[in-house]
Length: 170
Figure 1 (cartoon, rainbow, N blue to C red):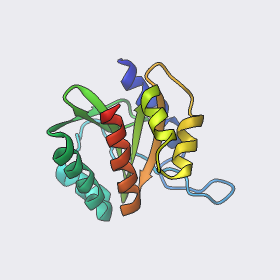
Figure 2: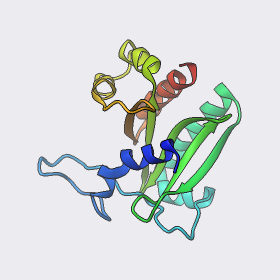
Figure 3: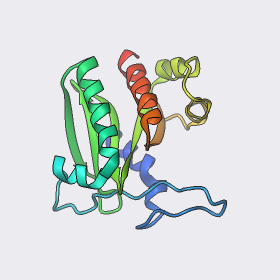
Figure 4: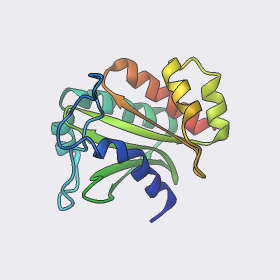
C-alpha cells in the first residue's frame, strides 16, 4: 500500500469508531458521520453519489466545477481500502493528489495533506481560526500535515476552494 493510501486510513480512523449511525460525544457535539459506501462490490458512480449526498450534492458539484475551471481536468480515482474504511475518492490534478473525499449520508467530508510550505501559507491566510489551529496542531507525517473537514454549507465550500488553491500553488 502506498503512503498516501495509508494516510487516508489514518485520517479516517476516528470516523470509523463512531459506528453505523451519526452520534454525539459525551459533550453533545456532533461526531463525524460514517462512510456511505462500504460495499466493496458496488463502486460508487454519479447517480449513487447524488443519492447519498442528497442536498449536499450541489456543494460537491460546486467544488468539482471550481477545480475544473481554475486548474483544468482532474481525475477521480475511487479506491476501496477495506470494509472498515469503505470507498474513498482521490481527486488528482495530473498525478498530484488534491484531496480525499468520503460520502456520508446527506453530506461529505474531505481530507487534505499539506506540506510545510502550504502550512506556512495557511497560517498566514484569512481562513477560519479553527482551521488554522487544526493544521498548526496536526501531527506531522512524511507526507505532511492532515486536515479533515465536513462540507455542509456554502461557507465550507468557500473554505475548501481556498484550501485547494493553497494546495495547488504550494
